[in-house]
Length: 297
Ligand code: COA
Ligand code: MG
Image 1 (cartoon, rainbow, N blue to C red):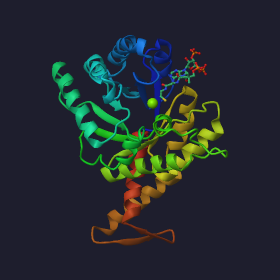
Image 2 (cartoon, helix red, strand yellow):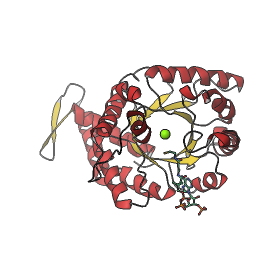
Image 3 (spheres, protein in one colour):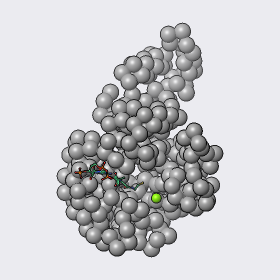
């Protein structure tokens, strides 16, 4: 999936609007964008929205729906799950995850609600935000083999700023400072080492299209499979830049064909005057998987 649009779970208007955004995935939020006094209403609206647009009636071409619950430390996670699991969201996004063990903890809570709703255990995926605290950032490498439910890791800069006490997360030139470059990098490494997809964080300056395009291109270059958005206007840019080009797809298919024809026992080949070896094959397969997830190729 390329684009993940955050939608505040207490806003009927935005929930409705999100359906025509073109996002591959909606992240319906019960956490930071919902004030404490609105949590209950957000849970109800989210449950109704997910029931109507996800679950067993999920149709091809409609967005995949993930619900962001409140973090385990808030004491609210279980109430969030009680409200939404029976509506059959595609997944749950865990914010402020600090260790692979947090994902196991969440998975156990989810299993209880799946059982209560007579849903098969494990059908609801988990996605984790792993760099929102200093501790979580240091533990981004602990997600290998923690749960079959876990599909993606993403990173977040705003909460990490607050946790570490930084004044700003960008330099005067607009680049992330070292702390955030580190968080971004350990998310890529943590995801790759655990066989998961890495999803890039939000770009908050939502009127700045050129800035978003730059950040999307850097994300594709560095191995992210998609990017989170906060505003519907960001979706088209993200989808466009995360969709592999026809030329890249052709080349990936050529590499795969070349290896298929050469058989199992070959290590290195040449294509258009360039050396091609096993890592290129792996990258070609990843690209085709990405294209398939985007509904092309
Ligand atoms: N999802 C769905 N619809 C959205 C949306 C979103 N994330 N953000 C804006 N819209 C809608 C607005 O409701 C408005 O629709 P309308 O014309 O029918 O009322 C339209 O898109 C244009 O919105 P705009 O006026 O440009 O933005 P805004 O000032 O209303 O909202 C934000 C700006 C940042 C508050 C809003 O984009 C938002 O809530 N983003 C998500 C925040 C979030 O979830 N944060 C948590 C993760 S970091
Ligand atoms: Mg947050």
